[in-house]
Length: 212
Image 1 (cartoon, rainbow, N blue to C red):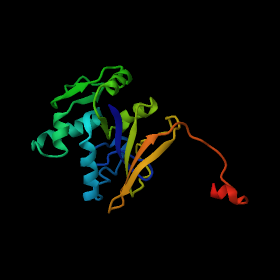
Image 2: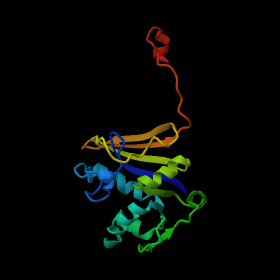
Image 3: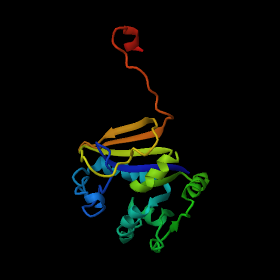
Image 4: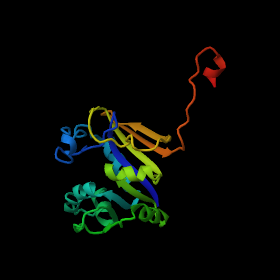
């Protein structure tokens, strides 16, 4: 299976508490629910299309608890998001011993990286990560992500947890698809593209450089 990361992100890279005011107040974060006013049909269509491509989900503990407190309550077998989330396997990276009550949930071992590598070798389409900003740091650092689906919202927050943090190694990404919703959310798909390449910007004196 391909490992695909989905993340809601501000213009300055913040991914903390996008959905609800009380989602994650770590560090005194006061902007929980900053995505609330930007939904539109195009946004929903993207989420439904992506969820339909999943064969399993991979979640950090905080995101898992948020999902488990909401999606099992929607029992409509035809619901395009709740039905796959409730029916498909959910692999959870957690250090706590608390039970995973959501049906189909499975705890990863302490060797999370090896577990994920084995999951990626399993047959299927996509192993999807949604949110899970803390857990994503491991996935990015270990180069386990095959595709990034980033929804960038037209806000900058100045504070909060970021997806690409200073502790991560630099890396290049290649844009493979993008669209913009009516509310200004940029929905973009990227794939890893090796190391960051540095060089000099053309100085404008040589016209062949500018046309290259």
